[in-house]
Image (cartoon, rainbow, N blue to C red; front, side):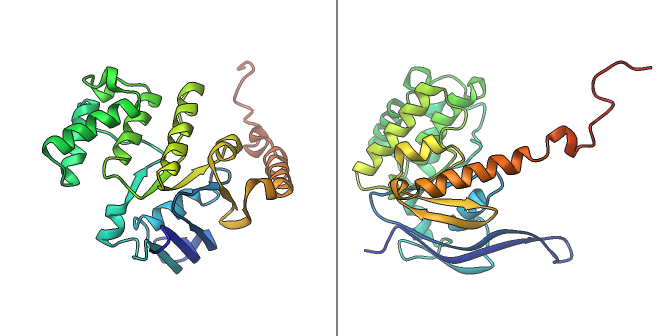
Length: 261
């Protein structure tokens, strides 16, 4: 059986209206994710994590290289059927309840009858929203909405789960529960690709990680083998951030604060 996910020399450059290159977002990225493996994309905001995820989901066209999802191109129906996806920002209809939301997406996957009913109830409990299953999603906090989004990503029983900043908006208890869920999925042989800018997230969950910085792979491997690379990367990132303060970069903003004449 083919590997769940293979990227080989993938590149992506964004261009302006006239076709001129503006941002080289991903620069020759290569990695694989095996069955039952949790693989982490670690990097600061703007490093190319979300762009990479959108390409492997077939939502963005790559400029070069190759992507295979279970041996298929990412735009194929077979690839889509095998993948579950939790985006960085959870988009759900605010007037539907969690139960209605999952039933709606379940029907899009061709589920129905007892199969759909049982799967929806299982996922409501798994995501910890069964006690609010009949409240409108629009009344939920970001963390609760995130839980519903995670349940929706598991509806099609995916063999590859793609999580973009999965703990975003969650409190410490919710974060721990999501991490435990990821490890439980790994135990069932499901491949998981998760992106994060938080080192504790990938340390707790991932078998291997790739450190991504400005579209380039800085290092790749098991966390215990990348200790020096991680330390150097984060020291450089902090130094780059602190070199010029936001107020200095904006010219000091003399109009902000103080008294007006």
